[in-house]
Length: 146
Image 1 (tube, helix red, strand yellow):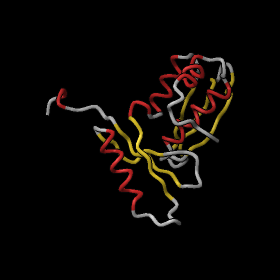
Image 2 (tube, helix red, strand yellow):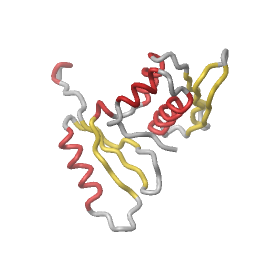
Image 3 (tube, helix red, strand yellow):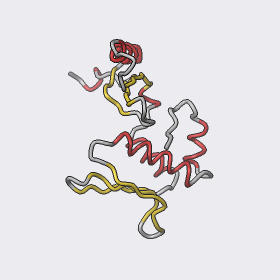
Image 4 (spheres, one colour):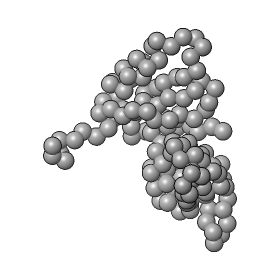
């Protein structure tokens, strides 16, 4: 298959426990309508006490770890991440020279949560930054809470 034959991803399906704030990505599709159908099917057979919910989002509006880190870099907000096997990831905003403004530990499978945390902390700690201004201008993105 040629590189030109690959379609860009257009839709993602995300899930979360109904008692949680953060969403995690579970599937990606080359059309938003397929993602919407899959999300609907995932949630269709659930009883009222089922603790999961699903949604479809446009891939370009999804907040991925790479997108968040690139946007922070472009806005001159330093951040970092270090791994240690079996201990997950240490993630921070700031740097060793000027000090870390925030730091958190995450399990190895929590990349979506890392992206949400970096986003929320950057907006909170640097409200006058280009990053925070762009986040406010793109209010259509699912907002991070918590």
